[in-house]
Length: 245
Ligand code: NAP
Image (cartoon, rainbow, N blue to C red; front, side, top):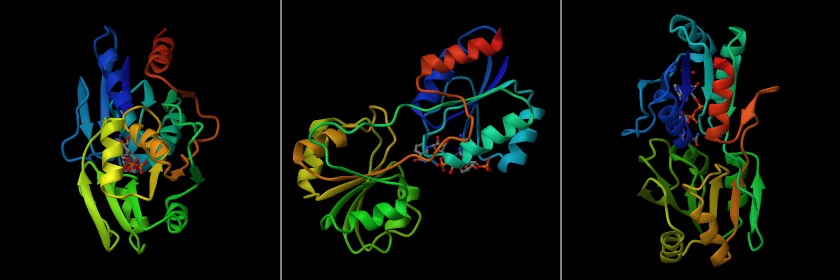
């Protein structure tokens, strides 16, 4: 069975690892090409956009894909919508692998917001020094802010950035001890993050709790109406096995 895994996440790589090692599955993973030195999944990999829903539909048909697993990041809403639309229009099964969102615990001070622009407005009232971990593409929403920002991303932002900032290039996982040290050293007043979920970048939330700092948490975009969702790699693999029967 020929499968497309839309990737760019650890879960997508784990699934590609499992499925590529199984007889009867021919896996192609797709990456957007945003990160300069991506961690490549096992098996075949293609890199770059498809050209919207139409481009993806043609690509799926031309490459004989029989099922699609959208294992993109929870905030890759455009790719998710395109995957659902293109696969459905061809009558192909499609599943969305979304790790669970983070949940607030005792001692947390989270302010949930729907979009980046609302996050920028909200954090403006929370002190001068902000830790921003919204991915380099998200930084533009803060470009007009007067506050000082510690911007952490895998690659440097190429968009407009706030006047007062420091860029810290790093890729998770991060430890709680390192995050506490970073927040303390940079005298951070508040954090802004997307609700990515998962353990890779969760330590900053524990660190914020320990230091009593507020967190502006940006909610995920919704999945398309009627979409099938699974939350773990194991569940996505089960789904795939069911399609193969
Ligand atoms: P997006 O806004 O949903 O996608 C914009 C366009 O980028 C899509 O329409 C598609 O172009 C192309 N694209 C996105 N993911 C692709 C993939 N896996 N393979 C081929 N083309 C892809 O996505 P994004 O938020 O920019 O994220 C891009 C990639 O980074 C995703 O693969 C995602 O898993 C990963 N990522 C995103 C975040 C985040 O916070 N957004 C965090 C970590 C990793 P066409 O329309 O031309 O097909």
